[in-house]
Image (cartoon, rainbow, N blue to C red; front, side, top):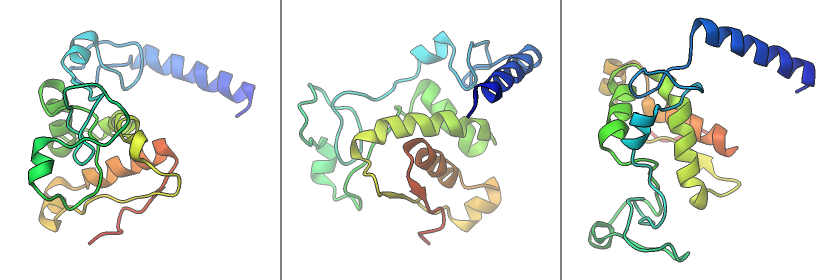
Length: 170
């Protein structure tokens, strides 16, 4: 991308922000950047970091020492997958964002949620990995009109520079 193009693009974004200022994706309050969270929503969003269960991604107590750890649930229940990660806990702002995407037609949430998911999944992503969503049941697809898992997996694949196949699984 050339310097002239970037200058024009930045000027157009500045003009657009005068007409449509950036809003918090959680509550609609004023923020400085597109797809951002205000201070209050940021405090209520529990981003997962540090030591996590290698199977399901839930946070674990203790310090990450670079080896795979499993939560009690994953030690007792056989999972149909090998490794997993989660970006945020499903409560407070995190819950509201997930429900807004699933049931509120908030497709504007896909880019930030996909970027957060890519950041959380980075330790388990491999260079030639293919990203594919779990399919949505056809009745849910008819009800929602879109497949939020396919949208999220596409955003994750783009953020991580991986190939995406939204219809791999049936």
